[in-house]
Image 1 (tube, rainbow, N blue to C red):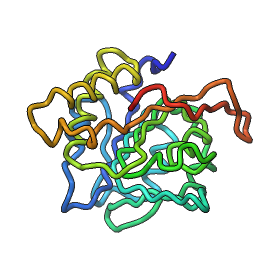
Image 2 (cartoon, rainbow, N blue to C red):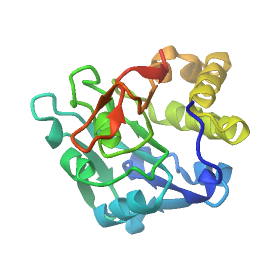
Image 3 (cartoon, rainbow, N blue to C red):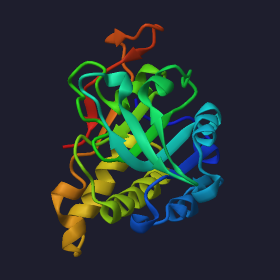
Length: 215
C-alpha cells in the first residue's frame, strides 16, 4: 500500500529553491494543495527547510541536485533563497523523518546512483525514515517538471495514492499537445520509492530501492 495518511494535505510544505531566472513559481502547487505552505525567496534558508522537514508530512523541494557517487553523504541539494546554500545528504540522514509520508525532489539527478547502495539523495530521505520519495536520475526541465507535478498533486488529492498519481501525471504529459511536455525525457524518469520490509538501515527503518512507479 502506498496511500498517504488522512489529512496529509494540511501538513505540506513546498520549497521553491530554483534560481529566480528559471523559476516557475511553485505557488501554483500551493494553490492545488489546500493548507500547504510555501518557502521561497527571502524566507528560504537552510534552517527553514530543516524546520519544515521536522513538522511536515509531505515536502516538495524544487532546486538543483548534486549527487556524489564517491562520497554519498557529501551529495547536496543546492538551493537559491535569500542567498545560495546547500542542504547536505549527511544533514538529511541525521534527521528523524519517520513522520513524513512523502518527499518529492523536483531536482536534477536526485535519484542518481539509486542502485549504488546509499548514493542517491532520495535514498537519504528513506534512510532518515520517510515512507516514500520521488526523484529522477537525470537532469530535468523546469517548466515540464512543474506542470507534471501540478497534475500529480491534483491526482493525489483525488486518489490519495502517490504511485497512481504519478502514473496519471505522466500520462497527462504523454497526451499533451505541447511537444515540450510530451517529450518522454522531460517526465518519464521520475520514480517513486517506498519503505519496505526487505532490508533495514542502521536505525532499523526498512527501505527498498526498487521503484513502485516510473519508467
